[in-house]
Image 1 (cartoon, one colour):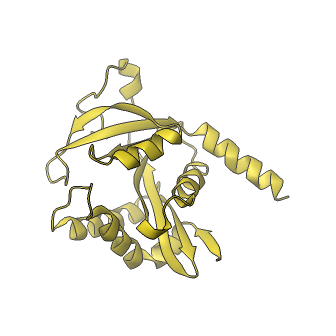
Image 2 (cartoon, one colour; image 1 turned 30 degrees about the vertical axis):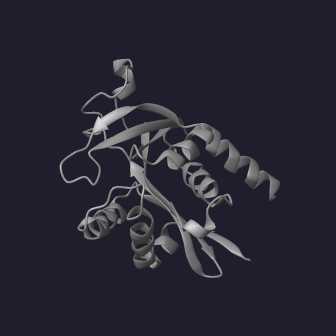
Image 3 (cartoon, rainbow, N blue to C red; image 1 turned 120 degrees about the horizontal axis):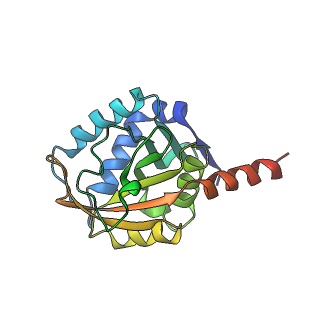
Length: 193
């Protein structure tokens, strides 16, 4: 089976398929879901595509979308750290240009999981970013999701209460250094020369 990975242009061309897969994955347990989330996600994703810092990776098998990962840079004026989760030094929460990339969403079709697609999508996406670190949020009941990220080196930071309109009342925050992902991409590129 042929597996193809694509970036931002391919992702835009598959916008509706990304939204359908998002709904399929995140409307099922263990994730919290509200009926308006599908419409809200479409609006968020359109806004992300308009953000110059936005990046995306998609995975296709036999021309069928089977996974995606996307995110954007965290702005210096972001309210992301408003509740100061965890017991960290204040410098941990400081944002400046080039510091933090937010992995917004990762989804892989349920029948394609445990085959390395999620790892490849996250590694490919982060490996092409210039920021120092990446952060993400996970709904607390998503045990398998948290285990996946921990195996990739993500570190638990703390729990935050959700902003109004969120599908989950609380979110767990994870952080990872991006440099190892860049090194992986560099090694792979040298191996293909």
